[in-house]
Image 1 (cartoon, one colour):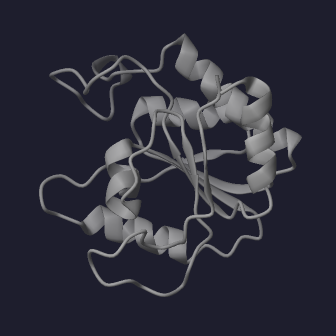
Image 2: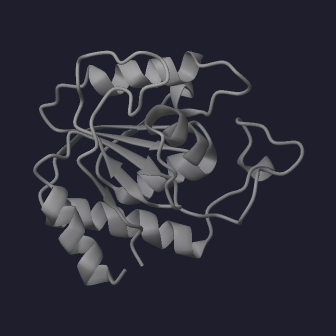
Image 3: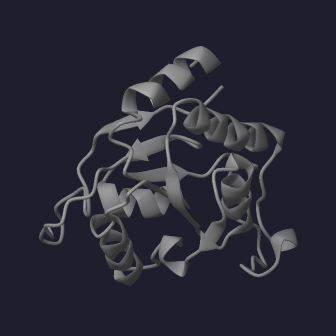
Length: 176
């Protein structure tokens, strides 16, 4: 998608941007290396130049279209935190809730559902997280740096019904 089309798509969805799930921009393909530690960026798969540019482009598009970001929360993984910082739309908080659940546990996705469904603004909540986390919450598989727009819904769906915590308003393809 061209930069102009990307900015146009953000503009189309600017009004309903209440809770936004942002899949992190790309680093190197694949999982984190052996010896991965959340508290040490040197042990992680980090952003590459393209990923950094995508983070900056998304923030620029939000600003251009007047998307008011009142809270930005990131997974504690370095590439997520860096993406949030490069967007330059506000101070970045971290939350373990944005890490993927492992195994059959759903404790984090339930916390994430609560975070999304209880958001009332007044501005946008931006969540910078991982594909597995987004998939468990919504049932959608996103591309790297794709944005999913979910206006919150207060009702709780039974387990297995997706998306949880919001309804899909739209998807914004990654900036090019």
